[in-house]
Image 1 (tube, rainbow, N blue to C red):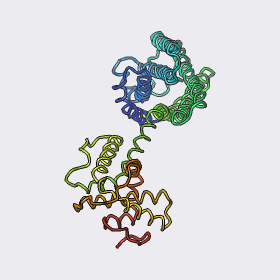
Image 2 (cartoon, rainbow, N blue to C red):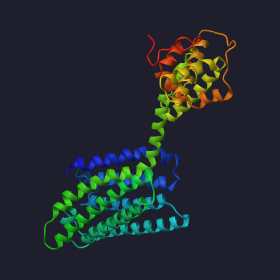
Image 3 (cartoon, rainbow, N blue to C red):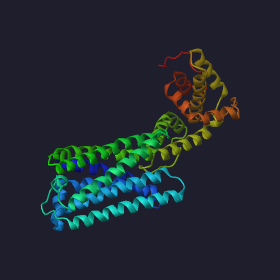
Image 4 (tube, rainbow, N blue to C red):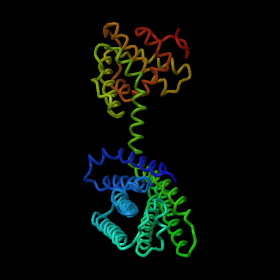
Length: 398
């Protein structure tokens, strides 16, 4: 692997951290939010400090040969602990149980990191190794034990997390289940990463050279696991938000014809006040819905039941379903009322729809908006607000 194979996953996880950073600032007391951010940050840091150029820079800066290896081992061990803590907080349960299990994992991996430091201090690793530290020092006293401890701790976290996510995924649905299955794939890759490195170390003990497993294949699997971990943890949190805003944006767009139609009734007075350009789709939708209700209130005195009835009958005659015909009739009534307001026509003796008829327009604005955009019957009512719709079937008026 070259340097980009380390830095690209690091950048990907940094982007994931940026996505969650606003949530951390807002809910920093929430252990689940803190755990997600910690997992992503430590995962990115692991790739950043495992890159050969970074290893060289850290070793030169500290003046200690292979100090970067100890740093990477400590970061990955902390990452393993953070993943276990995240699963514990994510799944939840009795608060006392969650706290007790969390303390145990924290204490266990805290001890692992302390032992890594002690073993590195007791050992002797004078030659800097950028990519094959594990196999090069596999037989060196104390360094050997440090390497095995790190790999076993990582394998333990990978195995436990895989089992927990697998069992949980069988019990849930939706975005959470999808995220958990992605995490299962990611942690199986991590488990294979540790297994390959441990196999290469054991081969060195037996006098064999399986260094390719440790220096080429294992890092590749680790790089593949990084996006799985990021997506798996973020998907259940970000997925519903994305769908919610996508639906809001789609509804906002579908309400456009009705919004513009009602805006024509009073062009000098906007239906709603301005909002910031960076407003979310949900805020934009709320503004548009409120403006439409105000616009309907403005033109409601000009609503004419006869216009609606004629348009509905016209739509039924050309084969529209009852629901489509109803929406076309309501849209024609709105379009005729808007044009009557624009032309300054008096309310006069129009046959006003009852309260239920007006409410039907207010509660189904999307259907009315679609009819305003597509129906030639509505176009006829818009062109001749005081006359019956032209009997032109479904052909657009010329």
